[in-house]
Image (cartoon, rainbow, N blue to C red; front, side):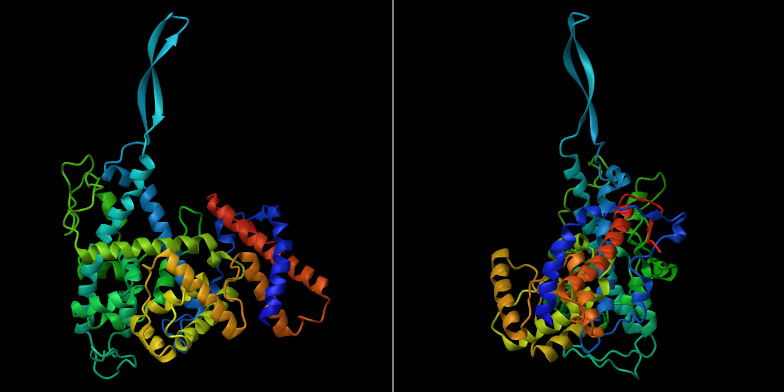
Length: 486
């Protein structure tokens, strides 16, 4: 089947590309926001849970992971673009007034003329807010991890035991607090971002938990269901992908962990004329122009530096996911299903070729990351499917990755008779799904090749055009979005 899909996607993509410019077609717009299309379709997430299936993450969990990465991407943009934080960090206005000597012929003399010019380096200074935000987030994560593990230990039951066990940990009882911890594990978005990036360095995370005697936190499944509930994916650009904690979560963070639920707003509040005190690790530099300094704190620990570097590296991956934007595409379900299938094949290569360094393609990497976010489950998956624990190292150089990708491409094609490097654009993924559906229905070879290509292309292009028009309207901050012709 793969050779058929490969042939048709190449042919149909060329046909789709020639019509790409007609994306901005004439659509009728919703009269009120309540009539807006909801993309992704909420029904896709029915049946979402936090557990692995056949020791693999599910396609729906991978889709929620895309939502989470969009939320992280949005947080970064909001921090950098926040004018209130500019003042907190002593970043002055983007323009300044200067006076230039200019000869006025009518006066027959030189005069000082007032001119407004752009401040050099203003954008670069604004971007420095992000690593400072991460400084505070890393410190808050360390505090949260200790508190959450201690609280979990205090509510541990004795009857039910986890099937997944780590040799250096005692079994964890689940009888009294499974649902409770699924809720409480939802933390402020900055702490979640640090935890997420830390989990994607599995060996470092396990070593840290061992060193800090965190015996419960490494066992929990990543709370996908609650994360999906906490993210509002709808609205125009300035509102979409907003991460909102429930009140119970906010109260727990304040009362149990002594952590403000919203770091961004907390920093903004420092500039208000009321009494605010920063918790430990967030120092105020009285010598700076603003309340907080853009300079790195001298007391930053090795752990905090590592946690920040983790997030910075994962920001690159989040940017890639944002660029592809599968979460808004018409082929979301098919893209995620194929990614999980390809990841399963990828793990088989680890078992077959233990001496090779294998490099994941982008869709496979998403599933691999999703798997790693449930630390104990990931360990069990690797040992069962690969015969050993596989560490995920995101610090490997580009030249090494290039060589590994070439080897992986060859091995994948040889062993599975399938292309490894595939086009992941909206058109090609939607076409692949349409061809798979036609094959399941027995329609693939019932019509001539030209007619089949034309029918599939028309349907796919109609879907892609519409979904793209909705996203363009959203990014232009339109409140009312395009509606699909009935």
